[in-house]
Image: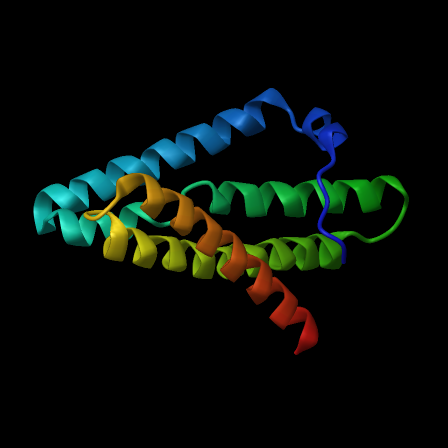
Length: 138
C-alpha cells in the first residue's frame, strides 16, 4: 500500500462525523486532566498522549469502506475491518515516532529549545518512516 494524501476524501466525511471526532477528542482530554488532578501530572501526561481522535477515526474508516463496498453490491464488513486495522497499525508505528520525539525533547530542551524542537521533529519523522518501512520488510 502506498501512503498518499487525497483531498477529495475530506468531502466524503459528513459534518457530524467531524463533531464526533471533536467531542471524543475533547472528552479524552478532560479525562486526562481529571487523571492528572487526581494522580499527578506525570500520570495524567501519559493519558494525554493517548491518541484521542483514533477511536473515532477507526470507526469512521470502517464505516466508510463498508458503505462503499456495499454500495457496489459487495459485502464490505471484512474490508472495513481490514482498513481500520491498517489505520491502527499506522497509529502504532506513529507512536514510536512520538516516543522518539519525546526522548529528544527530554534530553535537549534545557540546552536549546529551538534545536530540541528541530531535532525532535526530525527524529519523529525518521523513526516513523523507518518503522513503516520495517513493517513492509518483515
